[in-house]
Image (cartoon, helix red, strand yellow):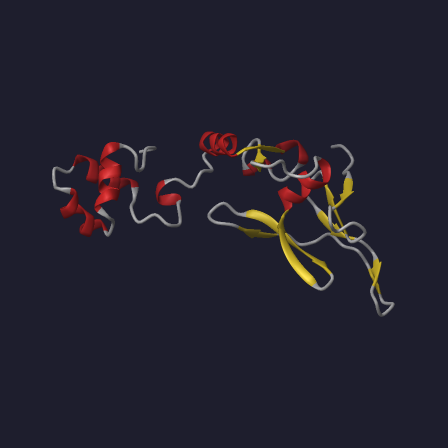
Length: 172
């Protein structure tokens, strides 16, 4: 394994650094009262929907900001995010937040990645979903009218129509 490379977190220079291996650390510092604080590797928490992305809390001027670790890595090693682009994981979350697994790309390319990697929050994996895959299959086979099915599944008639035409739940 190669030696871990550390770079300053943009906007937090002299306070925090991020490594190409996905770790974030605070630096030694002296506070306004003259007390010395030893730097340490920050504990990462998981945040964001069903797919949990590691985050850290950074403090500057008494303001605490929670930031995604993969964003910090790209900002420090690649530069600012180009307009219309997102931070993307090349090989899904299993490969983790290492520089070699991250890139900026378009929203469409990121969506294609998620579909190919199976990390997209489609259907019942979406926290807002009211239906299951089984419900969708039953709705598609049913001869009942949409206005009769909608109250049974607690969805709108337009949702029933979208499912039947393949516009809703197209992955099923």
